Amino acid sequence: MATTVAPIPGAAPIRSTSYIPALDVVRIMALLGIMSTHAVAWAGRDTAEAALWSRALELLSRSGVSVFVLLSGVLLGYSSSRQRPPLEFLKHRFWRIGLPWMVWAIAWAAVFLFATDAWQRIPLPTLAEVVDALLYGPGYLYFLVLLGQLTLLAAVYPTKRSTRVWLAVAAAVWQLALNALRLVVADDWGGDAWFAIDTHAYELAPFWIGHFAVGVAAGGYLAALRRVSAWGRLATAAAFAVTAWLVVFAPGLGIWQDDRLNGASSLLHPLYLPLACAETLLLLWFGEALLTALPALTPAAGSLADASFGLYLIQQYPLEAIGPLFQHLPTPFNVSDQLPGSLLAVTVLLAVTAGIAAVAVALLQKTVWGRAVIGGNTGVRRPDPAPADG
Image (cartoon, rainbow, N blue to C red):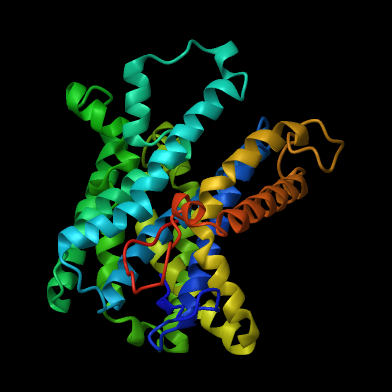
């Protein structure tokens, strides 16, 4: 998060000298990827060509989640300002993550059951299913469950830079091995215990710990990473291109079973860790180049980054309301048309729902409790390095 202080009520925040505006650009682009994933889900994919387009767009845009988790670690590793005792730190983070989780989990469950026709098509959920959904985050809110686990880790994470580097190596190996394992083991491997873990793997910290630990280690060397040579940047771009290609096409090579990367489980693609590392660096360098060339964009980027958590929380609601309308519009605005023919419709749907979410966030930010339910600050902005809410 950006370090800001508002000494006068209503005054524009003053950002600290340690603030890196380019990190706001990283966050905004990651948010755009996540919101794009939600919009692409409405597109037609019934032909082989459309299915490939859908797979490529969804997998590559979903890397925004990996970038957010990595960014959480970067912010913790970069900032030396967190001096709160663990219990005080956790109490503060509850208001940033716990309260939004409770509010929006209940809201999403209510909308799914009563504001759509879902109850006409499937049996109402049992009490056990409702409890399971609330514990693990219904729908897209799994990310808040993951953030809660990373918060517990952030509160006690070691501060020595060399220790963080070794932890990053160990955590990356662990995550890569664990995420690869779930793609190759037999269906009956591990019995009921493994089945229960694998069902919720995409929202459990052990399957993401490599992103977070690598981010923390990188945060300690952020100044050096910002000065990488042109050759280093070219190599990073090449690594991103190769990894992105493999993310989309590796299952076609018969390396693993493609059906184990369906839906939210695709977030556990083993190649997302190297992809997110390269993508985050490229976005950081792009952000610095952009804001150096156009410094007037810096305040707007900061404001949009601060609103990103709220945009993530709210966009799903206009999507549920407007998405069906876009399925009945004429071509080229019919989102149900087969990809790539529906790309324009997807883009318009994304823009409209993001705009509605932005208006809602702006209205909520006008009150203390409104800011609280979207994970915003309720008072003077303070240094708050982890995790990156998004």
